[in-house]
Length: 157
Image 1 (cartoon, one colour):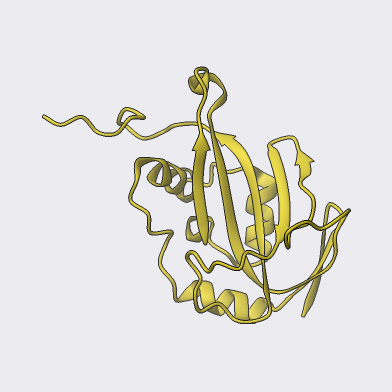
Image 2 (cartoon, rainbow, N blue to C red):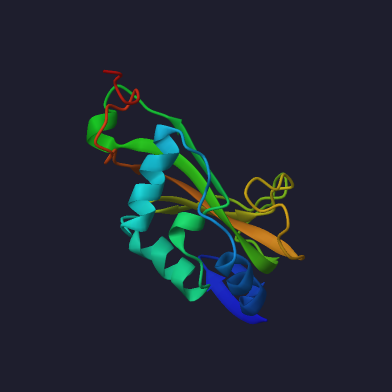
């Protein structure tokens, strides 16, 4: 187990189990436009450097998120982006949180790009066979729309 410290979260990670699981799985599988947009950003490594550094240190490809959801967008979405929630599953355990835990999750740590949160999601989403013990490295942030189609979806011709 390798020890990591991220903004008040202290974790132990089974790097081999994490790396091996991600080596054999596909990318996040939702085909909706919002998830395809996230995947395009992840493949192009256009997520915040801090998130990419964390994922790289764990040998997790950013496009293999175990949960992705575009929460909502506001009238000014073109300027500030779309609010996404996302996570990647990690083999290991959380040792300490930087505050109170609620519903299996530690507090959201505000970062310049959004919020970072570690916890445990019971529903397996994209990781039903993930090794135990495990936790989820998650967060939320505004991301731009980069697909070459309207945000409402492709137009039919």
